Image 1 (cartoon, rainbow, N blue to C red):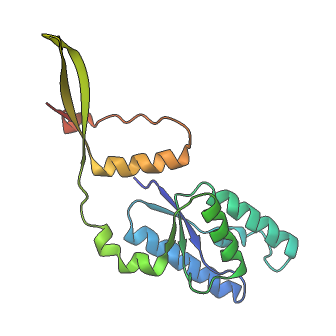
Image 2: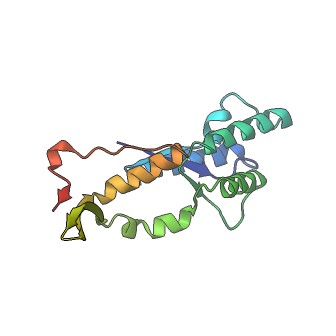
Length: 179
């Protein structure tokens, strides 16, 4: 299931038609290359009903774009070395709101490394079980958490700041705790 909302940050102004086609291509590539990504490219959508050449409609589109960016897990910048004015505003917003900013060119270069399998986390949980001849007896339980589940958890924690998130182990995967 796709869970990662990715904001596609690329130019709109200038050759608007060509830039929208490029943004559509970036979205398609993101869907084809990363099976967890849902690309969000506001200038592809908003230009269907707003006129980017009218200042008040451009401002409305940019404001709505920032509202969408607030819901995203990452900002992918296409052309980070020479961003447009609108892109600079999106990058500034992402920085202010601790949304990870990724250089799209770097993403493609590092794609193979990102597809390598990740490990699991082993968490040792001590528990006090009583006293034995005046000495505290402590036992520990080791819990294994699947690495992919940790990544999903990180996404959910970013989407719901300040809230507790409950993870339930996959019942078919068997018990998660090792003694």
